[in-house]
Amino acid sequence: MRKTILAASAAMALLMGGLPASAADFSFTGNFGTDDAVQLFNFSLDSTSTVTLRTLSYAGGTNAAGETIARGGFDPILSLFDASGALVGVGDDGGFGVVGTDALTSSAWDAFLTTLLEPGTYTVALTQYDNYSFGNLADGFWRLGEGNFTVYIGCPTSGPAFNDASGEEGCARASHWAVDVLNVTTAVAVPEPASLSLFGLGLAGLGFIRRRKIGA
Image (cartoon, rainbow, N blue to C red):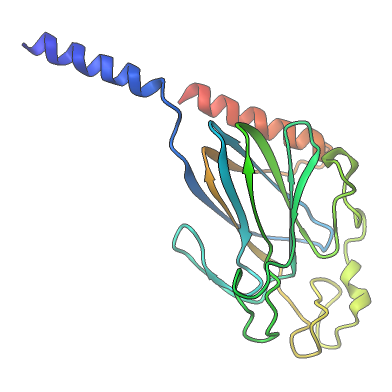
């Protein structure tokens, strides 16, 4: 009888191992050191899924992990790339009723993007407005090398970075960010070694995801 139970358990484990992993939500937080910083996240999908990418740090709120995120962060952009590094979507200002409204500026400038994606691996880049992608991850971003590019806004009460065109009272912003990657199989935040290009960095992170999945 015990052998029968063990055999049944082994068969069930084998069956479960062959099924696609269930979708999950992932939350990330951190800080930028300069205006032109780029934070990459890699995620994978085992099946076709509607994926949602969002930030919460401009207006604040509660992320998918249940953590309270403070308002006051910089104006963010989320750029989505496929496994080849091609740009497939951009999430900028989510708008009223979609993302939170900042209590000080009355603006709804957190980033938001939702899209149906095929199985595979993808990269998301977080940047500060208006540091947009040139079109492919390997091509970089508009403001690369301009560490204090928001100084042109001329906020009278802030430093050389993290300025926001929202009027004098709300002009000075903070360096913190918060990103949710929702309804995916796996997701990781990618470190940023100075010796790697953005595209190489993305591929390295995708390899890390694959190693995690194989070793799981």
